[in-house]
Image (cartoon, rainbow, N blue to C red):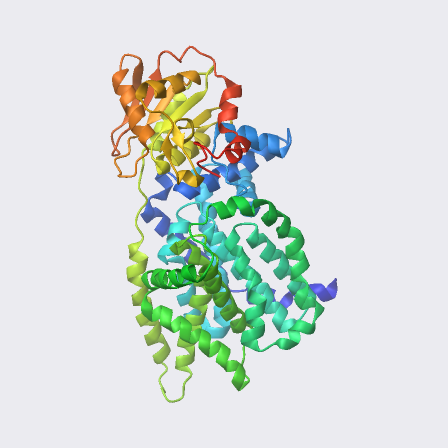
Length: 553
């Protein structure tokens, strides 16, 4: 035990002096959150599902494990059909749920968790950089990380990309200690951290590539003969493989591309463009140069195990995004940013050590130029759009009918998801309200409504479907976009044609289009048909059907 503890002493010593940068980074993150307006706005599309998925775990714990997990999830999903567990792993949802137990399920508490995760990642960047690049380089890398537009977006919402970046960097830090000491405990910790990352989201799988790149870049073929090198394999296999086997069909259904060289070429150009926009071409080139310098140092006997591992992480993150054809989005590159910035700082610091330059100001001058190049990207992050459902959710709870606690949401994709999350957040007796998706009752088709078709041909049939479920409240926001769902316009027409019975009880004209809450007089006295509502929205029926209504995982 003493020997195992002694292995951590160098790591513990390195954490001293991190409090000042932690405070500074946290304040920077809070500032950018304030600029985005996120504390007063709804969550975005994926963020709504990430919030609800943590909420169901939180509520299950709060219930005292009152029933089986599957039964609880089915009932919760029937009320708030936005649970994403299965499409995404449960690991971070568990962390988020525990955070909610301590700090509440409110927007502020959850967004503070996002701020903490970004700060922890920034501090890790600083901790890895400082002994290799000096404090100037460490400050540059850490601040460059938290102000990146990719990270700003994740910090100002409830997303999995920053937790993935944090987990991948944390796992790499364990692997650095393993390469430095070759002690099995650090290999085991890397395996545990890698499994955790993979159970957050699929792109945590990039860590499976890390050891191979370490062997290649560090020319450490001797590691292949050590049992400790292979120790992470059974740890990850036992913890992760069963989950991936069960959920892969659901995850793969959401892939927007196909495996092969065509995607590889498309992803190469697309991801490079994302990085250039977010970080600037000078920083991107400096990072590549720093990575080459870190690997080349091996030939001169000056190899740094930490830098080799950081370069391996960068390579693993980059290759993974070029191979796995899930989608092309800049936020998927979040795990690449920490190693890129660390390598950038290393490359710039190395310039100052070149004898032929002969100036102590060379490295600070380059850092200054690169810092300036980061400004356009940092300022390009757009504030979140307020959709009007924060106010609408309060109105729904005032108009809610005790004997028939159900409501239909007719809006675009983002509005529908935002409404569900806001209504769940405002539910003091969760789950007590059945929220029916318009995209499930009145239309839908295919994964994420990719093959959407309206279910009914005319307004009379739409009204009949709403009445068949005895839904007394309808929350409507029209969608003027070219790809708008047809059922939203049908519901608008139903309200206009039945003005004597569809009474507007709330209208938010502060957003465009306005959000309107209607009370339907003919359904207000009916009791909710819980069995029908549950069958409509329960997750098992959702996954089993291939017809209209398969809108969300």
